[in-house]
Amino acid sequence: MSTNTRIHLIEIPVGGSGGQIWNQLHSEREDICEAMLKDCRTTIEERPEGCDSNDHSDQLQARLSQIDDALDRLMSGSYGNCSKCGRWIEDTKLAADPTLSFCFDCQTREQRWH
Image (cartoon, rainbow, N blue to C red; front, side):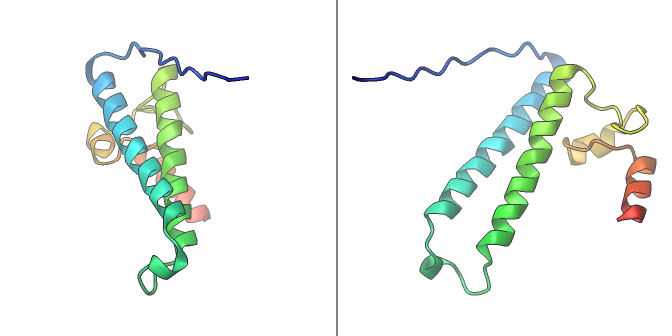
């Protein structure tokens, strides 16, 4: 018995600058997924000295999670608003890192607690 798996891509209706952000986030997401696959294929003997694969993998996984969260916010219409207080996150900050979920004030408070 043969099974054919079909993947159906859905066109996401995100226009304007939201479309650019969507493309940027998806591009980075693809790069991270490729890096994670490459890490899985690399044996311990092939790793450069001092390279801890777990740390690198954890960093990639954390960034992937940030990207997925940002894509979710983009789809829900809350992208660019602080996840804590709801205020708009500065455009310059979002341009530097489109995955930001907190405004400057909330991010500062969050860092103080950790």
